[in-house]
Amino acid sequence: MRPHTITEKILAKHAGVKEVTPGELINAKVDIALGNDITAPIAIHEFRKAGAKKVFNRNKVVLVPDHFTPNKDIKSAAQCKILRDFAHEHKLTHYYDGGDVGVEHALLPEKGVVVPGDLVIGADSHTCTYGALGAFATGVGSTDLAAVMITGELWFKVPETMRFVFKGRLRKWVSGKDLILRVIGDVGVDGALYRAMEFTGQAIERLSMESRLALCNMAIEAGAKSGIIPPDAITKEYVEKRAERPYKFYASDPGAGYSDVLEYDCADIEPQVACPHLPENTKNVRDVGKVPLDQVVIGSCTNGRLEDLAVAARILKGRKASKNVRLIIIPATPHIYSEAMKKGWFDIFLKAGAIISPPTCGPCLGGHMGILAAGETALATTNRNFVGRMGDVKSNVYLSNPAVAAASAVKGFIVHPDDVVK
Image: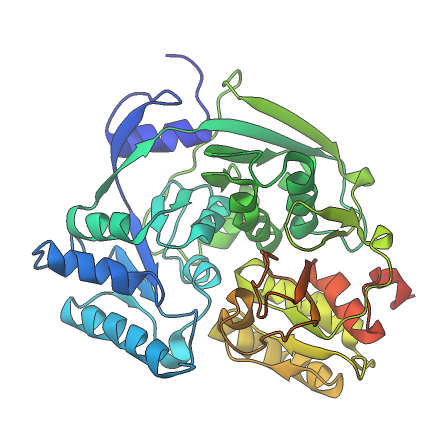
């Protein structure tokens, strides 16, 4: 057999064949099928419309009402009730509600629901986050989710793989968020269209799991089918104390075929900012200029984890957010919320004048907990800055890592963290 990429190996295993080839159509068994309070109601409607009586496996269908919760209005309450009723009817093992709910793509790795070697589909485009664990994970439509809920299988076109090699060591204040913003700035929002993005190199091998999750989370912003990092000792340390099921580490073979190989020296990568209105409009933070801010959001499935809150607390300690800035901090899961509180970070955030939200997607999609009015500008650690993404179509959203976001909240305009922490 020819050498294969990690993505090809996982897909071949789940399709029950010896090997697969890019461009080939396959039918594969799914380990985890995920839906949220926006996408799952449609899937549940199609599930019932098809006459299905039970899900293929109550342990593998996962429902997380995280986008508009705590319920922001009557319509969102109705959406969540559909999930709640379906979860109870089918006795789903992985249904999270109330004080158990967290942002889905932070919650599932934390709970050990997704493990290395899995094939995961989710009716949410940022399902590609789980590639950080060495899984093939991709977003699908709600009707595809319905089909998997019934059969446990789905068709896929095997993607080509682009390889991104990060050499050297990260500079101060640089994280996985900056690596992916730099890549998206280079290749564009369609530069990896329907391809797997494989991230490797010495810098990746030293990258924390939190940063890996942020990196893979935004593969979709380059148009990719998935993002993936070959599992290693850092992966093992993270999953062995969490994994609900047996897992398997896959690795790409030497000589495996890639459509493109891009190499980066991390010594050249500064903290990045994506300017309106596309994630590809990236600049080094010092090249952005003095952009005044009305709101700063630290959270989301990209950057709402403990590592992210830790750097925010480091910068905000003993400082206050600008009187012109609404600083909103959203821990991504109840566990992260609890740990941040135990560590005393909430005191730091509150003294800085921040609003602390319960775990929710909230403002990331213009849902609630921080909507922008016309003419307002936000800097967020979220993953998208499209027109109207966080509110009015005449508002502006910039994207950054948590260090840049926290420092900018203090100054009232976009700055390098070194301009605040001397």
